[in-house]
Amino acid sequence: QVALMVSGGGSVQSGGSLRLSCAVFGYSYRNYCMGWFRQALGKEREGVAALDSHGSTSYADSVKGRFTISQDNAKNTLYLQMNSLKPEDTAMYYCAADPRSYHNEYCGQGIPIYEYNYRGQGTQVTVSS
Image 1 (tube, rainbow, N blue to C red):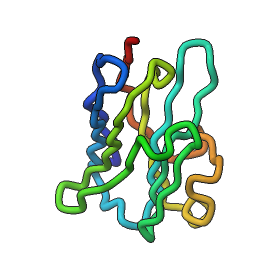
Image 2 (cartoon, one colour):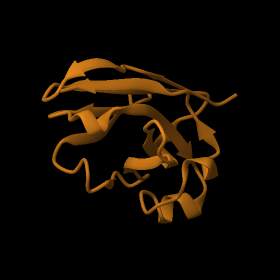
Image 3 (cartoon, helix red, strand yellow):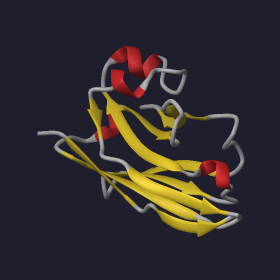
């Protein structure tokens, strides 16, 4: 049984930092496209960052230079380090994973979260001004 468990959300002031974790259970994600997504109140869910099976990363323009996606193979965990947080980063954050070749070929290029085989529960990030 494959499962993703997300943690690390919380409330911070503008300019602060948070690190989200996505623990992976049931498989080794080394051949997967892994992604972080978020959904703000009243808005559609959007891709934030992605990490493909070759270690290549991609980011939404709105978070480039502030967020970093990474992985710890020993802990089978995906991370999203979020620095210089802004109120507009306030959202529910989710992680997702998929091993299929299509996802690895187009990892981080707009595949919506609902097309990922495995999705974790959300964690709330709230940034106050």
